[in-house]
Length: 273
Ligand SMILES: Cc1cc2nc3c(=O)[nH]c(=O)nc-3n(C[C@H](O)[C@H](O)[C@H](O)COP(=O)(O)OP(=O)(O)OC[C@H]3O[C@@H](n4cnc5c(N)ncnc54)[C@H](O)[C@@H]3O)c2cc1C
Image (cartoon, rainbow, N blue to C red; front, side, top):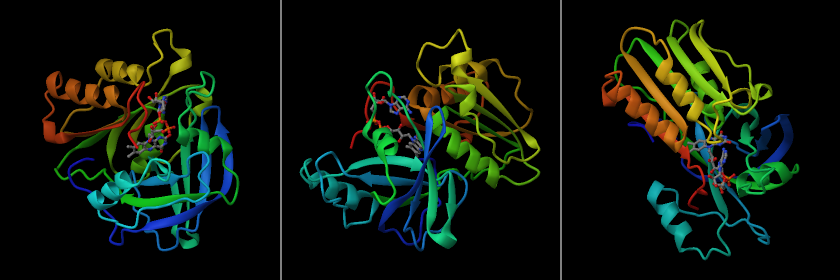
């Protein structure tokens, strides 16, 4: 995840609970999670790991080790029947004063029946449901001088791009390219006046082939980009993230260190845990 992380000082597993659920648009469910006392809000693309019970599990068993490697080894050593599901999500909003966060889940595969356990959890969630929470800090930490910021992602990156835009300096310049499934999935968020946000709507395009991220990548390759040194952050479906980086480095001669990229998910492959 990026070069340098803005990681939490107090890393611990927290047992959160669902406070509210809301279908905010055709392809997003927002869960408000509570019980996160002591959480520090970091802004930018602050993300977490969420742990939730598999079907038939009455007890949500969370790891006790908290180092990055330690918890995962402990998790892998736990028989599958007792392990929870684990998935990565961005904090769309955080209210540390009341120990709450909002998480926007993309609901994918609802029609095709190939929905993943995290999306299903979000769909079925009821107030009071328990969910494990591990703070991961933020990954957007450009550590080199730059004149403008490029953000590109699919719908899973919308919460991160919104958080980064909200955290940028008021005089920042930049461009955000966000691909979303339908026009109704667009969200308002605050961004500096110098940051232009381009929404690419999949179901309005005749060129979409079903793989999220393709259209955003195409938009990047035809975009007129601002002058000056860029810091780019490419996130979302893995081919979008790697493709954007390859394009910027090979075709626009952007130095590799100026491009961070994170594959959030892989088309056709479930997350590994
Ligand atoms: C740092 C980080 C932050 C993230 N933040 C968010 C966030 O805020 N909101 C969010 O919705 N996601 C976010 N993601 C992506 C999310 O973790 C993945 O989409 C995850 O795989 C969803 O888990 P699942 O159990 O629903 O599906 P899985 O069990 O992982 O996958 C089941 C099937 O669904 C497919 N699939 C998975 N995700 C999608 C998708 N979005 N669209 C279409 N098909 C999909 C897989 O390819 C697979 O075929 C983030 C990922 C990372 C690494």
